Length: 150
Image (cartoon, rainbow, N blue to C red; front, top):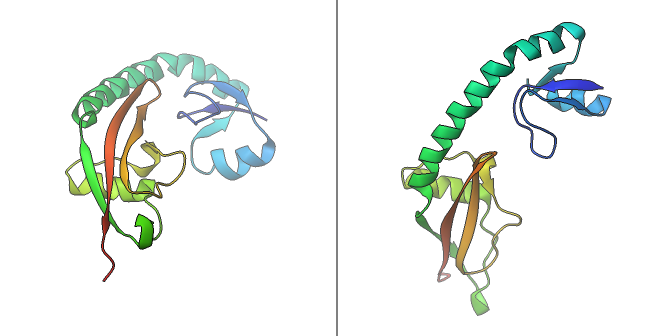
């Protein structure tokens, strides 16, 4: 099934692109979330007309992402977790925990923008990448400290 992407979809394409996907993926994920629309002749013509609008919107979003990246580049956050013997964490630190810590520090970042290949399960300092735009990333430092178990 051919669809036109309305927003960037990770590992699929950028907004405004015409892509081929499986029927179920389009029907159950892309179309209900308004991430894409069916690629009919009328929609393809409209896409060609709207490409300039999409390009301007992407430039604006990129500029906003660059400004946000400069604010977040040197940010260091600390997250405390309970630890057991040999400094093993109970549980892990996830993207949601990092988003909440950033919100507490005054930086509102969506959880889905935080790229964490796997949850942090150890004590220490870890670099975490934020994908603010398809061309803009920022790296912040997450320090995981242990709390003694009571």
